[in-house]
Length: 308
Ligand SMILES: Cc1cc2nc3c(=O)[nH]c(=O)nc-3n(C[C@H](O)[C@H](O)[C@H](O)COP(=O)(O)OP(=O)(O)OC[C@H]3O[C@@H](n4cnc5c(N)ncnc54)[C@H](O)[C@@H]3O)c2cc1C
Image (tube, rainbow, N blue to C red; front, side):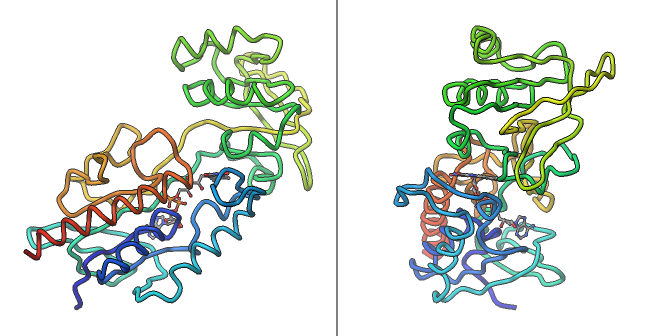
């Protein structure tokens, strides 16, 4: 069995960048991606905030460009899911399907997924009115009417961000009181002309064929339902890390995201994490590629010490 300098888990923006930097540093690298290279950007219609593309770029086009950049470099690729990891004094083992890969370092770049409402039509209308990212998609709804679902800090903060762009925002929360910080609650409640707060209600159905047309709201107290016409629906009911295979010893935050220092080192020597899988504030393509480059450089320095 061959020994890798680094196994990069995940072929999204963070993983592709980490692999590119590591190979260019002369390392022997394996890249494991269970689906298609590109990660979450494949789920979005257009990306307008990645520098270098002033007119924006389709999500799949950017994913193709990222993938093309590593196409001809010497990289062992595995198209399967990592399902287990083990660490010992001599290094790490990563199981891909039924095969174990031995490696001196691991770069965790397995990303995250937005929690969905789980309603019919939700998947089909994602990118056509349904969104999970205000920074990414808010600009598409300038002057329009949107609904925001959620009651935590993210829902309140994102509502404040969106309120500057949209014409009208309906904030739908299943409880009577918000969980988010008081300062955000005060700000949200201080904008009654822009933000309409709909408490004790849930989105019960999403309507539209090629484009979102509206949602059905249901009161959790009376069960009464009504149709709310909206151009956009922003869902902020949490994010989940793709970390089912992580070793027990790996330190994580209460939501399960990996804790690193500024050089992307985790608490386990030789394991680094980059991109959305990290515990951090801003989950974007720009920060994912930055993390990927930093993790690669930190892993390279670690390998130099190991080999000294
Ligand atoms: C709908 C939508 C719109 C967005 N719009 C924007 C935008 O406009 N601008 C912006 O900057 N950001 C946007 N984002 C966020 C951006 O896509 C992410 O921040 C970025 O993709 C994170 O990159 P990553 O490499 O850390 O993780 P990901 O992109 O999540 O990639 C992780 C990869 O790991 C793979 N993987 C997971 N588990 C395993 C496993 N066990 N084994 C092997 N492979 C595995 C996954 O298949 C995936 O390809 C958007 C996200 C979404 C969902």
